[in-house]
Image 1 (cartoon, rainbow, N blue to C red):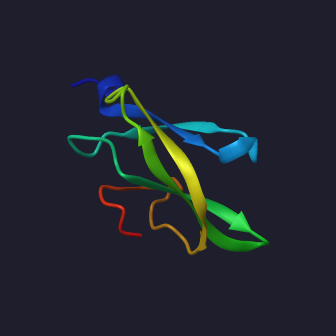
Image 2: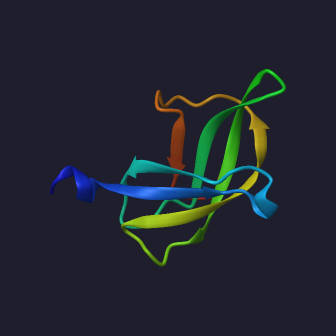
Image 3: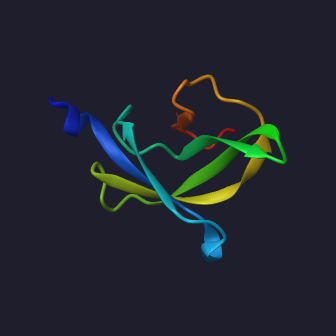
Length: 90
């Protein structure tokens, strides 16, 4: 399998245009899209994580859309600043 087929585009959406939506190319790590994506962020100068939940997987495995749920304190172990979670257990 070539690299293009090992990746998908995660579209990270913010409600009501509160921030500009972004997209990230991420590795496919399972049979379906991850339920949750956590992205490194900063909140009032502290380490934080933006939490996005899956809202549309109709274009899987090419792409999936995630809606911003909130920002929580914390850090990620992944050096790329993005963590995929197969279950919504955060």
